[in-house]
Image: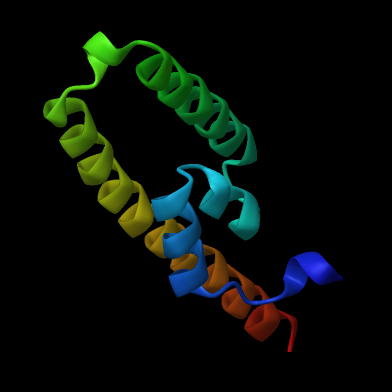
Length: 93
């Protein structure tokens, strides 16, 4: 019954901020999307680090903006999951 626990939106947001996709795995929703994002993030970071010509401030700014957006989405996803779990519990009573 570990999947029935309430998920902390702050943890989901922080996980998605530091490694985009990890928050989705924590919440348990959009898991394959989260795995894809993690793989893409690791590959993209490797490509940028191995090619010094690609190391542009615009790329890093883009990464920061995306991190904030995915953190916000992780927060909202955790809230959605928690709300649906609460409504299911109430309907069982």
